[in-house]
Length: 552
Image (cartoon, rainbow, N blue to C red; front, side):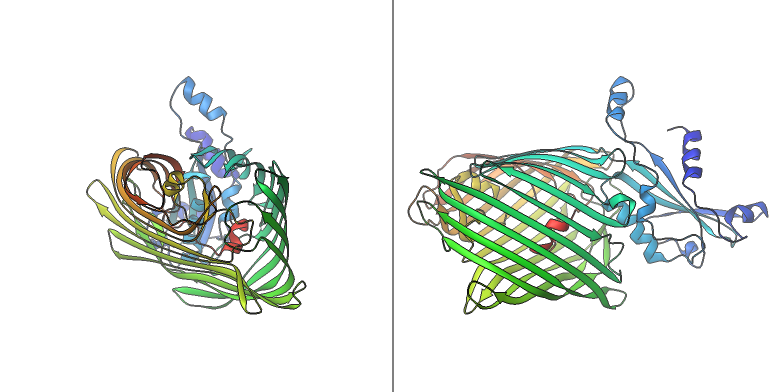
């Protein structure tokens, strides 16, 4: 982009100076000017100033020179200059608030629209502080390919449609011989407002589902309030001699709000309240074993009450990719627990719905990151628990010479799962490939140790790592649709993988694993395994299960 065009952009989106003592006036009076860039620390020179002009210095997506670069740029719609203004909390004329400035930059980076975001400020004398957001567009046309013997996924999405930050996607999946095609649209600035909305429609070979949500934009963990509206509906029916009977009807509608009740410099507490309505009529009958009931009927309306804790602690990390700029890493203890108490119409008794998540991220040394998470959900009716899930995971990442050491442990326990629950939430693509006929287990444990070695990197943005690893996996009472009774498969594997790692801890790497079993039991085959998947990363899936549908 030429200098003339950049200046034109800057003036096109610049807010007018507030008050007589703007930076331009101070410069005209001969006052010295100083420019600082916001990095991991907040420039001391900005404290005590007032906000002057807000502007954007935008650069389009990076592309090679010549004809190839012209083709690349023609496929990308430049992000509109008004988009960054939605994410900025600064107001011309207001005192500079360091938290608002830092959170504005964090929101810009979390949008996924930009590969680079920096903020510079210029102050002349004691005049106001003029702020400029320097952005470089990220490639917005994205694909996702995952392949395994029992599951595969292909998707194509444009995350910046017409430069408006709108996401449009098409996804085709096949999981346990069940095929689906989904079309979705998401708008983080719904009709130019500060609301966020999304709708997804999915077609199966035996039914359909749709979901939508509308929620308030989240500017900061310190927001006084937030709200969300959510609706999910599923209808599937199949009855044949091969797969048996599947008659599934589900609908969930929920409205919730969070109101800040307490805060200090390190954490924020908010009260969660609202209401939910759920209807489920489930009948699944087929040959082979099942973990829960074959028929479940559930209908209730319940008020919601709970509490959420957000951490304000932020650390920094600069060793995911060689030569990367410093990236922020959320630290501290966080979580949300919500309970619904209602009247279940079929059993004519009280029902309790629990949904919660607790997570902790620590950085004990400059080269070490430790994370731990626990999820719990389920329904308690009279004296029994149904569709209960308890998951836990812990990871240790340690910087090593030319790469990273990573130790991961994950476990899951199910209690009386609904008959339409077909897979564990805990990801273990390697064991799934070894036992393609298994879809569910009462419990599962996975432990892996890996050592990544960077073989290629580009400008500190992403890297390609070779990753030797060893993994142990087991399942207790694993359901195999080809066997009359559950099995207890166990396996130890060694292998090598390839990871495409980005410089942001919230972006999950794409991985290709090639592994060989060295010990196994429970009727597993002794063979090579090839798996293409997306690997959970530092801040992956850190929400309670009921919020997964409304997180962009």
